[in-house]
Length: 70
Image (tube, rainbow, N blue to C red; front, side):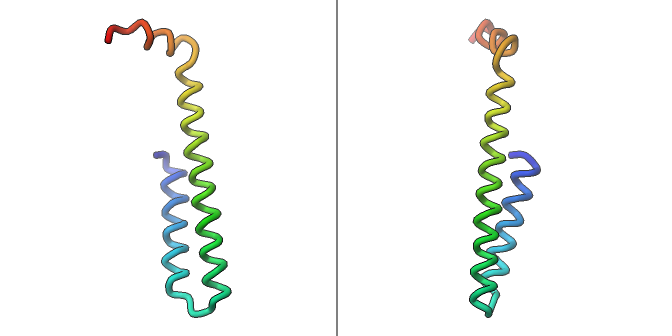
């Protein structure tokens, strides 16, 4: 997990904690929506990171891995 993903998830958790203490229903709903948006951004970043790792294993690196003894 990268720093960016961890940070987004921490911010989302903080928003949920704030939403739980809100007495104003509209503010609570906004904080929950912000938390969902941050979690979606974290998931998007996680998938981009995984895609970058997959791309990094193409070409010469992949060939070396395939030739390495098991």
